[in-house]
Amino acid sequence: MTAWVHGFVQGVGFRWWTRARALELGLVGYAANQRDGRVLVIAEGPRDKLDTLLALLRSGDTPGAVDLVVEQWDPARGGLSGFVER
Image (cartoon, rainbow, N blue to C red; front, top):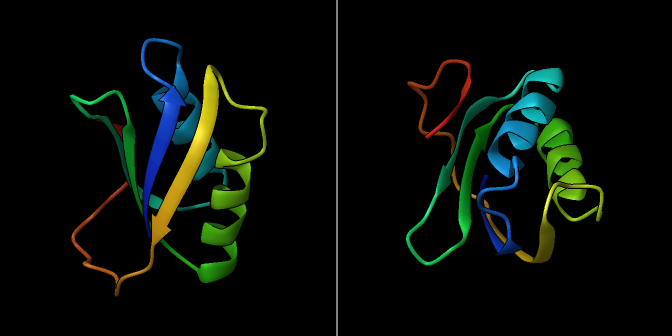
């Protein structure tokens, strides 16, 4: 899953929070700040766990303020281990 998270999500611990939730769910991937202020989340794992992460991103319980999450579903790329902040 690729998710573009819009809002006030940089400099507020959002990537760390996303990493913690993803690790709790057993997902692999990363969360990376983008120059335009969004955070890019790439996550791989079982679909139900990815759906849970997506719901958490949209929950309103994140650091900062999420205005919009746009997701895209693609086949797993593989080659990822752990979940990191970039």
